[in-house]
Length: 306
Length: 306
Image 1 (cartoon, helix red, strand yellow):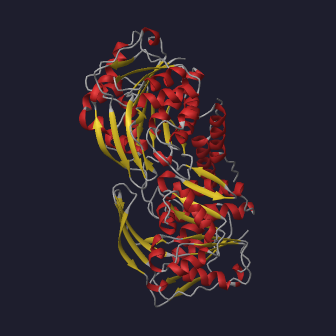
Image 2 (cartoon, chains in turn brown, blue):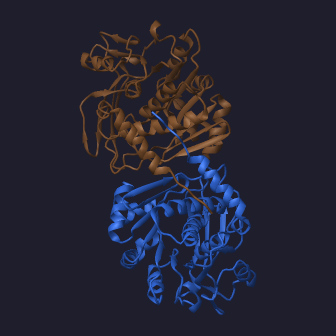
Image 3 (cartoon, chains in turn purple, green):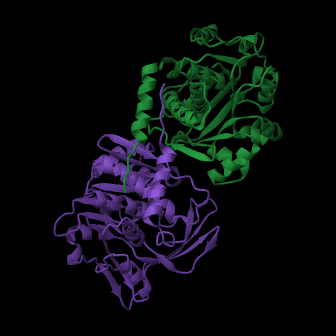
């Protein structure tokens, strides 16, 4: 199956306790499509960059088989730029700079070549843009996955609720799920989110793993315990990308398949945090991925008889 | 195998968002031995109570086959009393009252009938008392398990380090592991704790599950997602009790057995939080326990092929 990805393609400047970067390649759609390419899933990006976006990064994406016909280049505009500094625990960060630039007036266009994508992944972006993409699809994709964040709850509540209502799967972190529903218990929060629309609810808990709710069932996975998290930027996007790409590969949206997809997403996210930005994702091999998934099995498998 | 349990037998007065109790039965050794009795493991308590401790609670323990020969009763003393109020998220609490009472001058005595216990579980108590129990064992038990808390890091550091050094397995929560080692990464923290003595390190993460480190391997489990946590008091003790009792039942201390023991401990802890104090533990049946463990399997089992 083909995967259509909507989200930012951006520059990030990142500071962690381990060092800092100049402007490097970032953005939700970048992480997602890179992750899909590792799984050999055909993906296309709908996004916008400025004339300052380097040809080498465009080439890197196309070399990996990513369809960038829907990646608009505004020659006299500047690419979205985010800069942030992570605290010592790497669990929290301060945003230093946000320059929205060409994303300010972004009107997504879906190339004809991606109109038949069966899965649409609405990466973290303004919910109005996410809605407009869904409306521009000639036929509704078989599966719509939404990733979002607390910023849109504070600034675009009505549109966010509207796009959530049109979504099959939502990925959201624990604090955001609580903010969205007013429920502290994640079980209760997931129930409320189901009622808002999504049949499947994925709650991301960072270093504590993730939960999948659907079909009146719950699946839980821990995160792979890492000795060192080098740079958490893009981990959530990579997780969503691995999840969506696995479903595309399996051409199946059952709860059982989503469980496996959650593992794949977590495995891919565990790579993303090992180096700055997309550096590690750009070098991950299929065999590394298989080994990492095996690590997950060993981490969690048990037998018990009482 | 027989399990010797050292820890408080106490009164608690608990307030949660769901209600409050008068003085009810509590204490680490109580939760641990009750949990062991559900697994049909022979346990004995070394502890102390005052003349105010009700005969009906003593009878309840003996009726469940718990050996209380080592439970000293100081007729003219008062039982340890703790009172606390949980915040709305049930993840944090304020201590309202701590009356140490008969625990102040507690000198543990090990009854002859428990000298042959193969497993010693040193429940949360002053590390000096924990040390003295270990010294009073005629032969070192085959397995020494230590549970402790941050309070002793602040007040009895040297003794705590000493007892940790004599321990095979330590159970500790994530924040305490960080405080003990100065490492934020739990993988690094566990490595430092291994160097302090324990071959096996269990890091409890409350609603996020637990990690087991040992034999250069890691095992991770999520907690069972609960719609409602009614009263978290004793969850950590119950976890330790279920863990130790399972090892006693299996007469095996391998990493694989400890993985299963972690599941059993988590399952038992998930019961403990369903009602105030020990109320739920006093009614859990073997078949409920088996079902709960099965829930854990369904929560975490997956297949993935990429």
